Length: 398
Image (tube, rainbow, N blue to C red; front, side, top):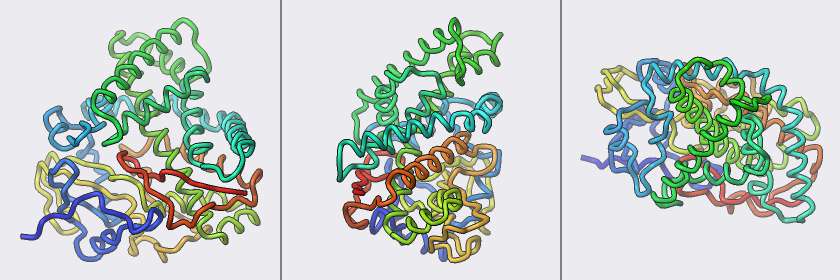
């Protein structure tokens, strides 16, 4: 019997997809793989199959504590055991509905001028430090955490602490378990204190608005809600967007014609962001789903109790869904990629992420039209030890 391949797969270069994605889409759309923990899982790589499982409300990320430990254990203990992950399916659904009432596209749109000012400040500081510069460290990583702190009503002076907590809680091997536990405890204590401050001194922020919405709930439930919301925004919204800024810019600058096309026609910025999201070859592990009952997918029976990994990035290159899926097309429309998931558990922060990506791209086009990679694209290095795929550095000059 052939041993299941280890997952996630290795990329030939940081900007190129693993060859296994295409191989499995064509010949083995439901593939047995071996996770870092040593456990077995089923990997889905076709667009329709991934969309079907992600859209099915019966199958969620929620596990009981014993199952969670079995599936996600690794050398550093894994980051899945957080307050949001401990919710039941019904509690999670109620939480999403509640947060969705306050975390709206209107709120994100109102943030955009401040977001642009943040991006301009970061780019200006990078230019002052001189070239070559690491675009990821200078702009990509600070901007999302600044935006999340602004959204939550966190003082500017605490941005650095939030960046550290995010990095720590997503670690698979970079930090030890003691460091992860300490960061979790520090973060929880900070949010509890922030909530108490907002009770007496509310502001124009998400925490204050949520407190007004949940007025009347018992204190412990309110505390859990705020912890889940803040942690969800930080873990899902900081590292993913920070890494995506670096990857997007690397993909655009790796082929100069893409950058020149955007300089010539700025109306392509929105589509360029969507195409970068679709073409991301270094996304992380994908979304796990845990089957509480038997399911037929792609003509195969998936048994109850299976762990299913939905590879949105492999699905985003499915020839059955996209014309010339391996080719970059700045004018691709429609572009119904699955990067933010789909269905009842799609990413709540996708409007924020899209706005950040579009904003930073516009600022860089305005301020640094001669921007280019300072090293060949194939010499870029992947970030290791985190669940979210990214690049160690994005060296640029202008």
